[in-house]
Image (cartoon, rainbow, N blue to C red; front, top):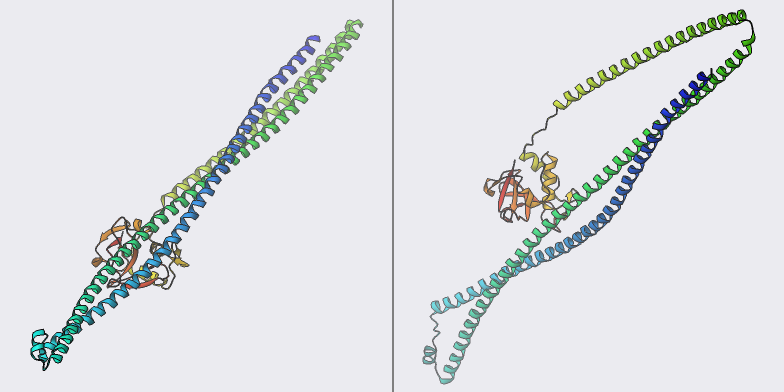
Length: 451
């Protein structure tokens, strides 16, 4: 009996030790993983704070670029106004020169037709008196001086015209340079904004991913703790069963010692009774074992059937996904000149707005990009990248829907949409609106047929 008691206590101790040892290790492992994930999240938040500082600096830089662009636009507007004034002055000077040339020619014709001599000698010889001769000489001197003054003034006016023309050309070049600089700055600004958006999206994605990983670990820890609670309950039940078995063994030992003095017949009878009871208990235990085995077998079959059903559904869903993916196709772009022109004319009168790409206001490349997008064609954002959206052609070959460019390729300063017959529609410049113009007013340098 003492061996039975010791055996029960030993089995209980082994069971508890086997269950408890992995529990300590696993719990520590989960805690370490969660702590490591918390550290990753903290590091990511530090990176976000650093990135936000960079974002603020970038926004400040963008604001500076916008301010500079507005200043350049103001300068451009003033230069264009000065250019228009110079053009008018040139026209006025040409009129004055033409009038002076006509006066000189008229005077020359008068001498030839009327026979009036401009010679000093003839004037003296034809004089009636000395006084008349002096008067004639003075009159001739006045006429000659007047003619000379007219000629000199004409030359001075011509030089002024040429100087004004050169000044006008130089200012026009300045305008073109400013336009190119504006396009370049706009491209840089949009590139930085795109990079900023990508950076912010990436940080948000990383944070969401880390938070999800942490939540998964916390769920695993909760499941683990629930499992440990179940194991602890089993341990308590095992301890209780072992203690009960030890108590029963002790009682049996004490009963056996008390009955050792009785007759062998009584002992034999008691032994037979004990044997019968033991056989009954063994039969009961065997029946219980059989029921448990049957229940576990049924549970296992049910689990296997559920798993097979899940695998079948998964296979079906995957097959459906493959079929859908196979039907995906990308539509090809097509160019319909009439549709492009019809769409572009909807925005006639829309004000010019630097950096604008909506019906609230357009710049030249923003207008072309918006119109083409409306008919299903994607164009780059700025002028000197739209040059490469198709095949270069001459302006004489341009048809409705082709793009027209001003400047040399790689550094163009303006873009418009060809309408045919030497006309085009565009967003001109500050202070103007979307309108239709012709080659005779402002002729492009080359054209691009969008592929």
